[in-house]
Image (cartoon, rainbow, N blue to C red; front, top):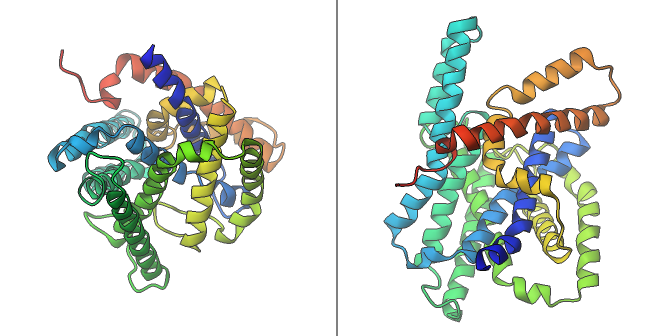
Length: 357
């Protein structure tokens, strides 16, 4: 019974991640500087890191772990599937080159290089960033915050100080990139772009952590007012996000990082709050959320989206930009379901570290 209650309590987090992966795919369908992409870019990556932070607060066994245990657990949980999915993608492109003479060996070598240097091929950049951001946040919370007593007020203050320092440092790094003091591509073992996007992700993880810290108090506020406020924010986030234009989180191409923090955090709060308070049930979104890692690693790194997009544009008469985008999105989601089922049934070791029998 306890496990069922625990599962029910976290359903809205899966739904939030489901929303995240759906809008990420939608943004990849119609890339570029347009109002829809500006709105999606305001929160689509933030929500994944925000949920990660919420789970850090909820499942806080790390408070009793040492640094090595903390790092090793995230190597198994995040870096391991990063390398297995990368190996799968490399194998696919090698197969296509050898059998169908499609692609080039130089491109395959570039994929190998981006994998080894933890840059991540295509959408896989997300996983090393999540790994390093989680490790930084957990180590800071573990050694510069509350230890085992969550009622330690002095420790809580130190956690807020750590959050402020991370936020300030991320803003300084973003400014350095924006004004062109340092100009780098995100490839290579260590680049300023990589460092900056990790710090940005830490800000959202901390935000999710503190949201869960004060969640009980938030839930005691007037529900009608809070629900109305969340709905209003989701609506007005669309025009508010437009000044940032097309947000490229991976390469830190963001007009205003403070605006990105505002929209990303408040959209995440609104989605999580409404999901829990309204007890929203949506099995497709919950399914996508639970399998968001597989979907993130396959929809674009493998040519799922590209193939659907090409065939649709070739054989289906144009309806309109956004209607076509939504239809392509739906087709991609439908195609992803059997891919996820196949991976979960026959290749579970790709997603999860094998358990000892």
